[in-house]
Length: 345
Image (tube, rainbow, N blue to C red):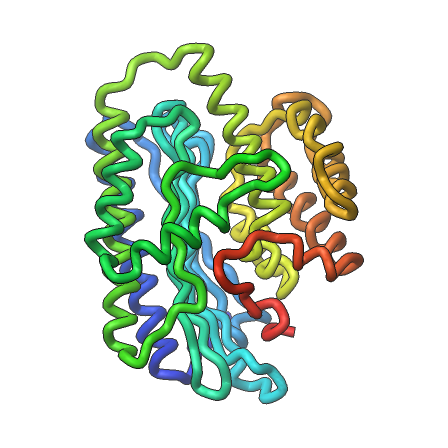
């Protein structure tokens, strides 16, 4: 089966943009691997929405290598051109997460998407956040300076929204040290908005590759303390994604045809016992969600999050929010709460 493209010209333009960003990042990561003497590469995986009738996507993924523990660079275009009852016309996105093996190599999350409604309106979503398990303040400054240069007029708003979105209230801390987030972004100048999305995506990708090259070129064998901090941080990352992240929840509620891809942001290993200590901090019904997520993990701690585990976790999240739709309101937000879930239904 082939993926049917969206009818809209702006959707096609957005798909070209996110696909170009995908190639830029994958080629950069593989070039870095070669320079560092690693044989690790990314494999191409295609998935179809409703057999391709409503689009689908391609992700480049890697796992359990000597350089990257987990890595996913996913591009998708989902559309509903043949369903007039849907308010949503199309959604085009690149969503990527990289978790290096070495604990001094920071993780990164980047998301650029264009969502278009049937009435012709639309908006961009631009996210970039640096996620080290062992903080290096110089990397934080480098990453944020690049985004400030890419989006000088939007920078203050984007970093303020990012700091709100990636805050974890029950733990009193953030996921990551550098946060850039523009939600529902549009202006009267559509060409300028497109250029901004391109510039932000390229700046985040290129700066992260430079940080990773600098860090991994000079690292030694990790210490036990560094590895312990990495495991604890990856557990925090897992917790934030599956209990607070609206993008993950939206993807899982809309369909079940790309669960492994949607869960591609999860790290390779998490501390099951540490997760259990956070249950009592959770308000109802999210305490039940965390208990069910822990039950879906292997019974050992630390445990490996492989594809079969991701599928079980996806089923848990989907079942929870179908049973407790009001709990979606307890998830993270910047200045505005996205309406994507309702628009897909």
